[in-house]
Image 1 (cartoon, rainbow, N blue to C red):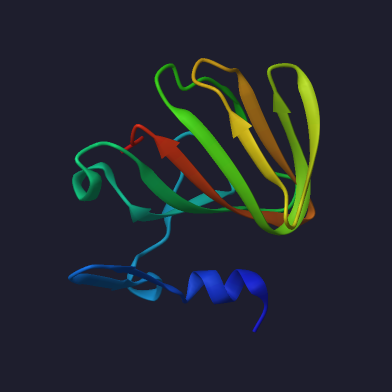
Image 2 (cartoon, rainbow, N blue to C red):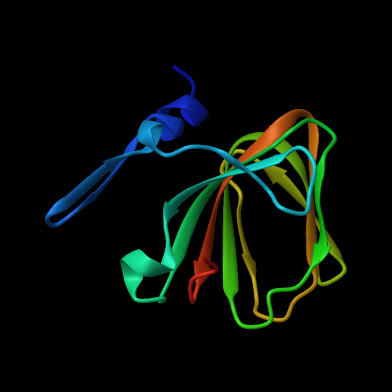
Length: 127
């Protein structure tokens, strides 16, 4: 089983709570074609403090330029490759890359030819 599938079929373990990622449905991104999200931890789980999302971006697709005014966002690349433009700087995304996007920073992410798989984390929670 490859690294992404280990995460895709992983689980969240908290004191008194356990959730299998396989039981969480993928949902299409509301604005960007070829982007799907698995909402692992949401605002309702953390009193709005943070949220975690497993993200897969189809080959050649993008999360277009946008800004999160109030959230610090991190990306942890699990598999694949691509590019992130963070406040005008182009960053190569490959497995093992961690990127920090400050609140208010314009950014976009484009997947390479094999797609891109990452954890996106938001503080405070995105949703």
